[in-house]
Length: 427
Ligand SMILES: [Mn+2]
Image (cartoon, rainbow, N blue to C red; front, side):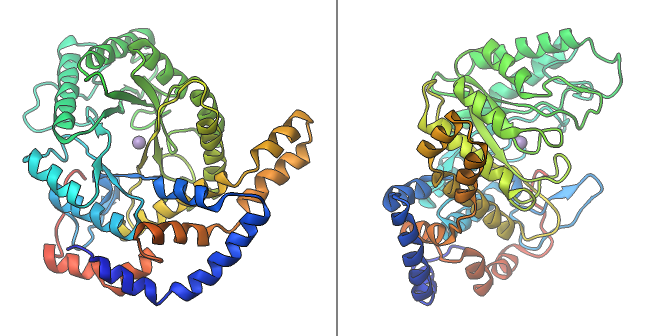
């Protein structure tokens, strides 16, 4: 199904007056603070977050999965779902494919469908953390790090194949996340595992088109529980530097030990021009993959505070980041969940744009700690919702996407079109 422009316009019309009042009040506040409303609006309108092809069905845990009616069961339907999200939110203008879960069969048709919906193809993701049907060698004991050259070669070739699929649809980057590691002390020679991984990544790197980027994701534990070959940003950065200037570190918010200062990692990687991409999700404990902003909205804001600062002071020419949501769970309608995540990300970004950086810099120079906190929290405590609504409305989205989704019974229609018992690929 597709949402028509007039449906959104009619929906917005009924809510315009209340929104206008909120927006006028907000705009006055911004003007009093000496901020440029139209510039801020533009920045928010331009923020586009990629939706991963695996987040559109019901998620699961390793204990079970509970299906959701009307799930997209092929790539075309997944792109349609991103189209729905984008039509309502105007902030989900890209999709990130996972190979082999979502191999495009007819690339031209897929490209055309996406273009009609205003959707670009973000990074393609390889998968060497599972064995696929008819695969010659198993990844049980690792992929790019494996002790056996033939297994490494198979994993390298898979990544090269993923690049080819990406090229056909117009992606410009490859994200590599490795489950490689060990669960028992002594299982690996750490140095050999690292070296094998570096050599394998270099080989994949050689096969990237010149205008592509490689993103290397890290994770401290899970599925392996004693060691991971790429456990942290430092290791990822070493590997990226070992590959070359087109390789970058990718931060996934859930891939840190509890209480890690992620905003500091963001800041330093950007200073080095080596932060390539970002996977958004939220967590209470570790890789919980909960809705962005559901647990730690202040942390999300502090991260965006560094991202904005890094983008505004970009001496190292850090590239424009690839933003993606990487979350999936069991309880909510995935489309409503993604709308909540998109809004939380935009909210954190908008608040970060309000930080008075000149005043903060002075307070930092003077070691006025209380004032530093005042400045940061002045921005954080601002209710930016009218700003987010105005940006979305100006772009043609719905004033309240979730309310629209419910009022128009979108899920019911999807169930009618696709059936109650369909299961999304890749899960
Ligand atoms: Mn991730």
